[in-house]
Image (cartoon, rainbow, N blue to C red):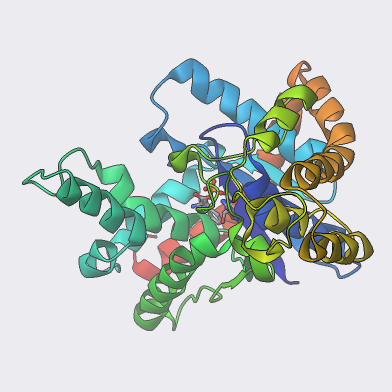
Length: 335
Ligand code: TYM
């Protein structure tokens, strides 16, 4: 059977970029009538690069698990687990390091961006403040994907390079050891259009590191306030407006149905509809979709259910990871 796998870092409370770019498409695959295997996990060791406060990390782990479940993940159907519960991931990461070119890692976007920031700040040592966890990040991510023999990885566009690297690393392994064991070569599965790179409140990609996110489960009044603060141009209410270049309209396309969207577009282009009214509409459609999930999220955060679900998920995930690592060990000559 075809396997879908994806992960979310436990670096905070998920935002609507995560929801539209990954959670919703991944759950659609899980709910499809096709008989897919679906494994969705919490990338808790990945987030150790940025989250250094243990209490915060524990909270984030619960928060990401509760988000998956509140959004409709059925733990009977989908294996939900924590990366840290699967020791085979880390063993495989070590093995994969030995078939991964350092030059490939030098070209990784996140690592290069960190060096560029140092350069822009006039710091002579471009690697200053960059830890090995950031540098090795793509290898660990390849291990996440390959240990479960994944075929498709539903993610946003920002992860495309990581998926290409994973395919590359799998190819190197297969080239060396393919007579004994080969990984399936995984593919990214990206949502269409804006959904694959949702803008944040300032128009750049919505990302925790830009501090421009709309957290998914913000209380209603805070959600409304945050949406009101999204900057728009100063076209007066009566004047015609350009919907497609405005952030509120771009966000609206992900939450409103086609009829409503067409109507709003018409009214903006004709003039007479102000940005304020558009933002009210955006709040309404987001809140209508999120409100029931928010309630379930709060319930889950207050219960012990999460731990049991994650323990059961780890059990099932490890049946797979143990089988794969045994074959890998055999192929490389360790077993
Ligand atoms: P992370 O935790 O940053 O984001 C989780 C998912 O949300 C998507 N996403 C977005 N999609 C559309 N628009 C946006 N503005 C936006 N921001 C985030 C991401 O593309 C991602 O799908 N490296 C991964 C976590 C990871 C992983 C894996 C994913 C670790 N191991 C193995 C898949 C398979 C990350 O940092 O995602």
